[in-house]
Amino acid sequence: MSNPPPAIAPALVQEFVGVSHGDFARVKALLEQEPGLVNAAWDWGGGDWETGLGAAAHTGQHDIANFLLAHGARLDIFAATMLGKLGVVQAAIRDNPAILLIKGPHGIPLLVHAQVGGPQAAEVLAFLQEQIK
Picture (tube, rainbow, N blue to C red):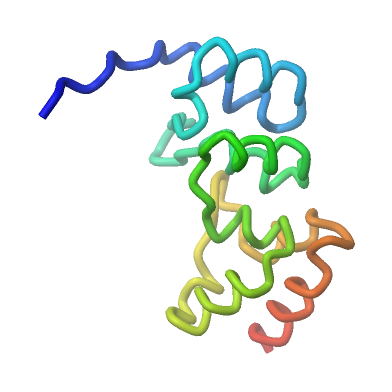
């Protein structure tokens, strides 16, 4: 077993997650500089952990989310919801209906991720609304 790589500088992780809320050019530049950022997470406090993908997911940043996924980000239920991946969302909720109630970064619920996904997430939004009734 080899030694793990050194930790990424916390300030770099914080910046990456911060810009993943909407600065696509900076996301690209930082990921080129440090590829390990793709799955790095920042704790905003009190266990409010967020990755770049999580930031893109709750702000409706399809371009950033798809870029991060193409570079190895781990798909989660929040990003799948925002991106309109209906099959993924349905399978997860059928397996564990409690997922409807979990909250993502900053306490943002799954339903909001579908709303910010826009037309691409319309089917997911309708599915979630039906499940919540």
